View 1 (spheres, rainbow, N blue to C red):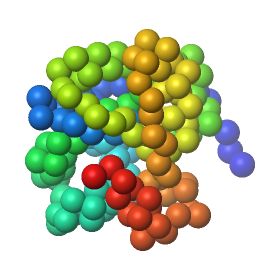
View 2: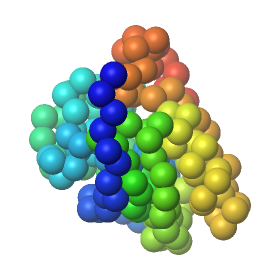
View 3: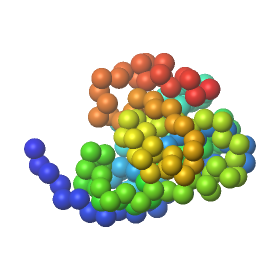
View 4: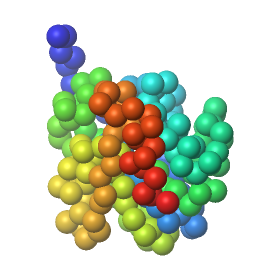
Length: 164
């Protein structure tokens, strides 16, 4: 196995939300591919967009504007737990020196009914860094990452339908 050196990375993708957002989905931190494309879940094998499109009965969005429109039309806000961290490549297990995002920008401007984590790491980091201040519980869903090979697309869709 080749280990990559970790380097400090800052989150540069704006949160997606509007005043009608009722559901907040949090990832950990953008992958290398997402950082390159400038938008969430940019890796072609990440199943996030297929899962969301399926549960809200949409065609899978093909560009950033379509992705934003699908989320907002379905009252879904999207962001990540981490504002900056040391990370090797896209490996959640390598994350160190976490600076969390300030979720008040969303929580104070929207009537969020539930917060969901895209994967266990997002849930753990939320509980460690954000829950003490927000007081809000998070519901952990299986990761849509290609690294979560134990979940088929169909199994992910079944698990994620609870957000509606």
